[in-house]
Each structure stands twice: as C-alpha cells, then as structure tokens.
Length: 111
Image (cartoon, rainbow, N blue to C red):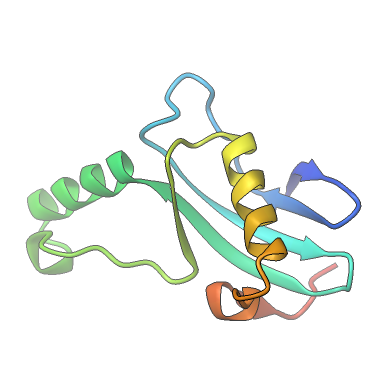
C-alpha cells in the first residue's frame, strides 16, 4: 500500500498510482483513514472510465452485456487527479449533511 495523500485530518492509501497522462479515463480503489481511527474503503471513477467499462462489459458479456454499471462505495470524479479526489473527500468531511459512513464502507483497521 502506498500513501498518496496525507494531512492532519485523513490520509489516502492505494495499491496503485493515479496516472497523470490520462486523467479522464481512470478509476482507483483506495482506503480512507481518518484521524479518529476509522478506516473506509472507496472507489473513484470518471464518467469516461465508466463508459469504457460498460462498452467492455458489452463486448465481454458481463453485467448483462453492459446496460448498467455499479460499484459499491463509489465516487464519480470530473477528473482522476489526487487534487480532485482530495477536494471531494474534504467536501464530504466538511458537509455536515453528508455521512461518510453511508458513502463508504467502514472496515476494521488493518494496520
């Protein structure tokens, strides 16, 4: 696991890096670890990546040949950059009307 972002409120770990040359067509699975000791699993996609995955599923016969797409703990980002992912998570944490435990799945700490 690699920490791709860290500040005083949370950090983000992932198994792979965000590629800077193709920010429109990526997805990433990540762990969000908060300072209060909670760990959440999440996935982030771009719309272009979802479209690509649906076309691929259509060709491969998966997801009933691609008429739908779903993913647990999903965020859809305008672009796949660390800045966009961090900004989105900060917005979720700062918005009192949002419950991070309903957006992502809390998992037992694995450290």
